[in-house]
Each structure stands twice: as C-alpha cells, then as structure tokens.
Length: 343
Image: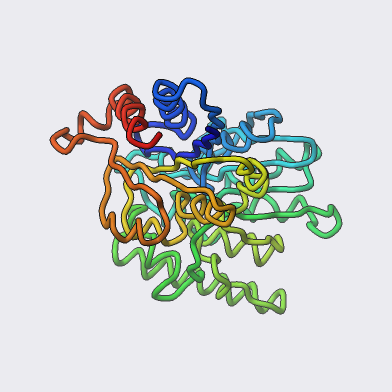
C-alpha cells in the first residue's frame, strides 16, 4: 500500500510534522510493508514555513524585526534561490502577545515589512506570504511604512502571492474589523474606529492611485494586510492549501496512492468551507484516491462523510478529559492507535 499522510497542526498541541510522524508510526505498526509519504501542510498560518521547507528545502533565514507592539524580536523566513516564503505571524502574530496585550488599535504589521525588506536585500524577487494568525488590524499600513520608502515594485520586478482562505472585504459589516477584530482584543468601540480607519485609508489610496482594491475578496485578510498587498504590491491571492499543494506537486505524489490520511484539531461543517483537510480531500478525489479524516473532536460526521471523506474518526476516547487529550505524548499515541482502524 502507498499511503499519503498530510495532517494539519493540532493547534496548541502538535505541529503538522509531529502529527504526521505519529500517524506514520501507527500505519507501519499495522502494515510494516506500507509506503508512507509524509507531507507537512499548512493553509498559510502556523507551520507555513515548515511545510515549504520540508517540500522544497532552502535556507531558514533569521532577521531582526519588531513584534506587533514594536518590540525588537528575531523572526525567520524561508529562502530558496530568489523565492522567499514568509509567515506573517512570525513577526506580526497573535501568539507573540499575552492576552492582556492584545490591542489591534496599536498592533502593527511593521515587522512583516521588515521581513520582506530583508529578503529583498538578499536577492529575493518572488514572495509567497501566508496571512494566518495575525494580531493586527492596521490594513497593512505598518508594513507599507517599511516598504514604500525603499522599493519600487515595478522597477525591481517583484512578485507577491498571498495565501489566505478569507474572502472578506477590507471594511464594512463583513470587513476585517467587524469579523476578526474581537478575537484580537478589539472592543465594540474599537471595531467601529478600526473600520473607519480602514475605510479612510482605502479612500485616500484610491484617490491617489486611481483604483480601489478594498472590495476584493481577501482584502480583509489578516486585519486588512491583504488589501495592502493587493493595492500597493499588486499581489495575487491564492487559497493557502491549493498554493502549497501546487508548489509541492501534490497531484504527482498522489499517483499510485491507495489512501490519503488528513486531519486537524477539530472537524465540523466549517471544515468544508475551504479548510485544509477539505482541500486535500478534493485533490485526492479528483485522482480517485480515498481520503480519511481524523480529528481530536468531530461534529457533523454525516455531513463530512457526505462531502466525500471515506472515513471520519475521532482520535480521542469519549471519556478522555480535554486537558489530558491536549498533552503532546497522549495526542501522538491516540493518533497512532487510530491508524489501526484506517489501514
């Protein structure tokens, strides 16, 4: 048997690499002769750089940048020839802040701009930027504050691709502030001010440049940095998982496969709204390969099965407390044990 293992991170518990390794161990315990292909995956947030590094190699570059509150930190990106793969959360992510520090009125994407400048100075021309997990809602103004004084996109021949599954516009009731601001620490009053700030910035930019990207799908991604990439850097927007799968030639990996095993921390009907396991299942389905889904928590199992997954399994025993299930060694063991029901 040829089995492809491509499991998303279990947030707060396991990385994609760790989850894949646990699944591989379980498969080989049951089927020692199986060929297991491990594919680290990410949709643009946590694990984005690691997934590309595992697939294409390159060099992890460390740079001195600023976090969302403008404190000096070190952050990294992946460089492969003239390609830079950047995970904005490394410099501008919510996980860099304590809960009481979250404040999107002041949080800045400045550090993400510094990562891009560092890569340009090292000769990079093509940029793939994952937009997940940001602490910011500044419409990318912090990033542009770094970039615009130093670069001319057209003269340098730079190409930007942004990875996001968010389709929200920059502002309005479905915009960055209203939809994503509260989870970044915004009060209801802050949401109104953030939305007005983004709207004002978009109007000024449109008057200056003669076109307006604020209504484009994905402009509201990562607190509106999607808009800044589109409006000022002429970026192309791609689904994070589709972009990764194309870059690693996933369709070729599927040739001769008998089963794909994917998963995530929690699966429900939202899994079918462009999340990573669904994107993997669709690719496999096109090639006639069955896809099994595992997760730490399962809801709407019938809906998931009807959507095309061949099997849907919860890795955790029903009586296991969440505090125990979230322990790294326990999660690994539960993933390995679950493989016995799949192969």
